[in-house]
Image: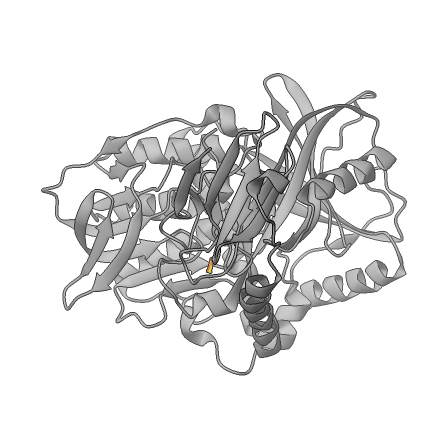
Length: 504
Ligand code: FES
């Protein structure tokens, strides 16, 4: 399937398999772990600055969030400018906006310079408030934006069929096909001598006096620097306490009446819905997303799709749902991403994570920041996004809240698991975590009756996994590792799968 779930995303047909293009004798300046937009863009940026780079990807390029995003390109963010002003001051909020603008310019200039065919379009975005609470929130968003000189104009009409209380339009946003874009960047990187290894997992790393040693499934690899573009790095890091994994749901559908909006659309619900149009294989469709929740914290992920579909059917004349998939992203405790030197590193290990719903923009910006930090030793964005910034001030309440949930997940699941006498108690098509003879197992019974049984304890930090019936995966509620029904690793931070028991 080439992605981290059982459902196909609208982008998957464009995935290309690269395999291993890698000479072991090369002395690498940087190893980049993770082949999504962040990893590939970082490799490209570092190569432009003359560095010899290797990209390691545990599966295939675009397997994770870049293959599951809806690929909005925004320079306004889920973290509003008014929130940023409040928490970090006007200058930092201004810098946040500049970072967004710079990322969009960077994407566009790559597309123009290399002639990348990735369906890129500049678009106007529309933010609309559907009730009084949202209208108040929108006023606050506009006030914050205006106070840093960011253009948002109230509008009387929007292109989406919602009755709204207030709306604004925001020019110069964008959209593209994420896999076509990173595939083209990967091709350019490889054509210029870049090394790449797919199906290669990095399980741990050690920082030395002159570089970084990575333990990987291809053996030990050394480099002067390492960049983890995998959301969170292997092992236990401060980042696991400052970023929380979430899932978002997407459906892509054609319309009976063909009235397709030209804009990007966003309501201000909690969680909010987001919309745009893309033509795939000759079919123009609306791609709508929402129903977000913390990973492993929905009893019925299939119902998230049903709610999203019902919501869309209320407003659109849906002809056919062509795609339905979900994807993972990370929420930072204080609203800003962590981009830069990994906490506890001496300065040779870098990380980029906590992008909220703005992964395409922050992934691109991360590439620039990390390339500057590695080659120039400084970036004007480094303080704002410093991964070491977390102290018991900004966002500390959220940080505690996220980790209180983690502790509850670790303890609660140990004592709350189903107890069944035999695996035969699990019906066809069902999945459960069960405790048998002192051990706990994650059991999935196919409709045919075939059982898939694996140990249910997440290898990362021993939480119990929970069933995701929409993507047929076992999801860890603590830090977001995910596994297929046979225990195979889909998403880190775990670097190994669930311990297998075998099929019966
Ligand atoms: Fe950390 Fe599972 S992801 S315990």
